[in-house]
Image: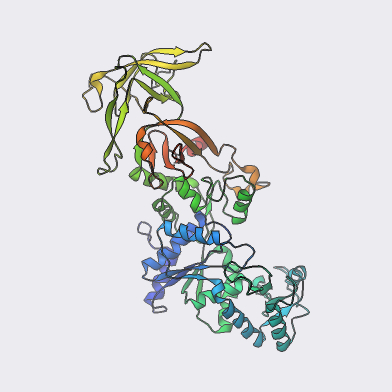
Length: 553
């Protein structure tokens, strides 16, 4: 899991627990709440939990924390399972907190009988006031001293649906003067008359996360319950419930969550972007969700590599999104098929090339992979090159095409610009060039000095495609630290659509699974929006980190 870094602190903990015989095997769990799509931060947790169990010969459970029926959806459940499988992991058991609703209810009754839980009629505002502050002790609820018999009856009536939402709650009876405010008689159950996506209308009382989480871990014999740092204050309560119930002693450990520059990781904020139509959906390629990264062309290998590179930290920090882009760029360079695509076409006519003739030239699919093979590329009298690859009044170190200047066309011939053709308004409409017949790629051209190589597409055989150029979703590096509404910092240029670009015909065979490098332009993938009449390609990442270049300026 950490071959190039040495063991992280969690690996050391697990290794020591197994060595000392504390546990015979390791069991971890990934416990997503099905109230949104997983994002790159969850990918780190997935890699950590599943990676640890794989490394030490244990297993990982997938357990959905479905304790809030008003925010959950089966769509989210399915997307979460798809994302985990796509990342390359498999769970031992698919479980749900709702599987344990009866057991959790029974355990709540046990705590009531032990005098450690009571039904409270206070409002949410009154309970918040009773909690006090970090520097001032809380005050007891006027309902704290109800008898065990009365609490049992009221809790049963809550379960039977005799009370409205918010009318009563069940609280643990711990210590209203405790230094940890989470231990000041925390809520265990609340009333919610809402349809649950798995249990239907069976229940109208639902456990709070803090009561359901640790007990679910104990039921599954989870040895190492790994959470992010915000759960450190919850740890005392996690152990208190387990100790009072006398159940399997799962252990909680915390690590720093992933914070990534130029984006947000809050599911609440991501939902605002979706509902407000700032993006096209959870899988909009500008989003940090796993499904969006997949649609954009990221590979599971690149995301796992990224998670490995950032490691497991004990302190919060902001990770540069450039590192994520480096990981995908590094992997795609090894696996992407090379293709030539012109995004902003300028026509070139080879005046000395035979009219009507089409020549098929070989081009390797991937120079990084000797077994990748090659494809045939049509070459003809009329071609397209990029507008930016020609300059009429070029500076001395401009090594692309200019009047009287020569360049090589990739996989083809050396050409020389002879004439610039313009319209009545003075706009350049096409270039007239000549080609050097004996300069075909692979031939000996030692007598001709050419410094530039351009990509191109044969005009007659060009495949029209749509290209979507994605960029950072936000302008601000640390969105959480930016002033005002986070949506004010959205990048207005995060998506540029080129409705008609021209590709070599080999891209007709493009698939959703394949990755492509458009020569000199970046890495791209086929989008699911594609149809038989119009292929759509998303830019995954450029060939170089342009943002780093801009920041240096």
